[in-house]
Length: 147
Length: 147
DNA sequence: AGCTAGATTGGACTCAGTCAATTCTGGATA
DNA sequence: TATCCAGAATTGACTGAGTCCAATCTAGCT
Ligand SMILES: [Mn+2]
Ligand SMILES: [Mn+2]
Ligand SMILES: [Zn+2]
Ligand SMILES: [Zn+2]
Image 1 (cartoon, chains in turn purple, orange, cyan, yellow):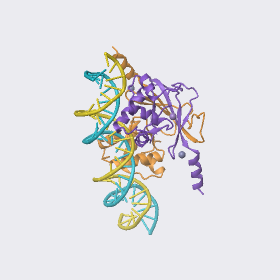
Image 2 (cartoon, chains in turn yellow, green, purple, red):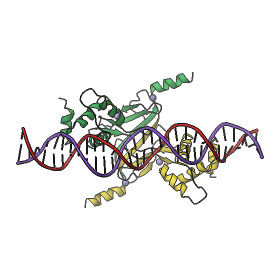
Image 3 (spheres, chains in turn orange, yellow, brown, green):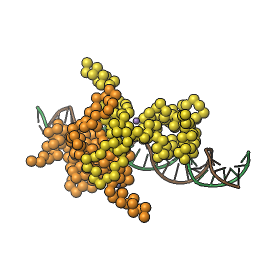
Image 4 (cartoon, protein in one colour):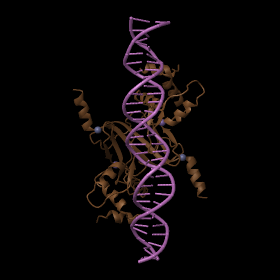
């Protein structure tokens, strides 16, 4: 049985507020959304979801991230992006041309999935991997340009 | 025989300007410096290095990065950082507590040193690995706190 | 129904850059 | 070694992405 956003929040010890439920709901089917994406979607939503302040949005994203209900990634050159997919230690492919981001399963599944060859005295808890390249559509477009 | 910053620039097809030489020089012994670090160091430097505008600094950093004379990394939560160490595809350890950044050699040495298990149609040219954790000093400090 | 710790709001503010118009200069040429 | 001009630097306004703080509101316990 699926659990509602409200249940999920309460089970985690967070109060179930309209703003938090709206963010969790907006994130479904909108992976790697930015705060601006979420703000726009929630403001323009049909239901009475209504509105939340910019500060409220950032507070919610921060609370949910710290509770591990969502994950935040920050690829170079992009504002922070959020996703519901947590706990599987997956990685990302990023297109240098259009910024498109795709999930890549982790071969290991648990963090840190990779050890540094020198740890310099650090206690490592995560190995974050970002593959940079060009996505299919951008590659085709670039090839066509060359005429 | 070592080559001067001026030679390096000219050999790369870039004009040798005081501003570019100052940035290259400031970066020696100052790995992973931010634009602000460099601005401060160059402004307060002894020689007649004098000054460069903020816009000039960003232009120089951008030109040098595109010429592959320096490399830019952007760990989550940090402003961009620059280093002279290029071409060896090395990776980074970042302390979640104090932000300290350490270099980690790449076991392979050439990019992309790691293949994604799904490429989603991308042409991958680089695998960027960031290990997150806590450095030795921060770990000790945290342990002491617990008294 | 009342209470209060926790959550949200509005508005000013900061940090890290970016834009565009103007002025300057490295180094190629005559 | 003087001239010239594309490429580089400067100035100052501006933007995107958050962050700070004091005041207000509310979820959910009693
Ligand atoms: Mn993802
Ligand atoms: Mn490095
Ligand atoms: Zn693309
Ligand atoms: Zn540390």
